[in-house]
Length: 155
Image 1 (cartoon, one colour):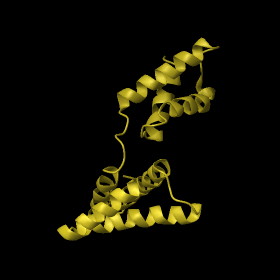
Image 2 (image 1 turned 180 degrees about the vertical axis):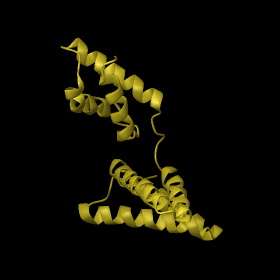
Image 3 (image 1 turned 45 degrees about the horizontal axis):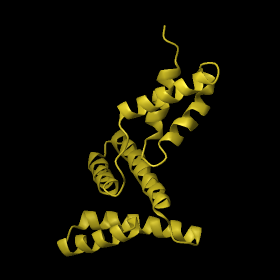
Image 4 (image 1 turned 60 degrees about the vertical axis):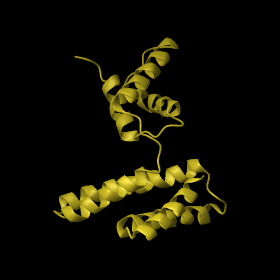
């Protein structure tokens, strides 16, 4: 069952359960998926649907930051609840330990093929680490922070 089909089935269940918040969130997700499909002029595969969901989650996180700065906690809570619903259709995210392990593996491999990477090689290291997480969902900012930490010279 594709992500779009799962969301359609969940919308039906939310309608029957009269869960308005879940229903409105799922409608928004389905609309975003449909808009991407229209832009592409072809059905979305699961990888493309995951990218749309990731974008929606990132937008919600940005909104939470803005609402928190603006002392609109009720709106920030609503956005956080939407993130939880959207994330239920995404694969499990990689944890900090797993990210750190992949970063150190990548740096070790890059060191074996030449000089040890330094901060100016951050882009190359990031590219290689993200390639290792091809099938898994990973936060780019978390990977960036781990790479910076690993490439920063120890005093």
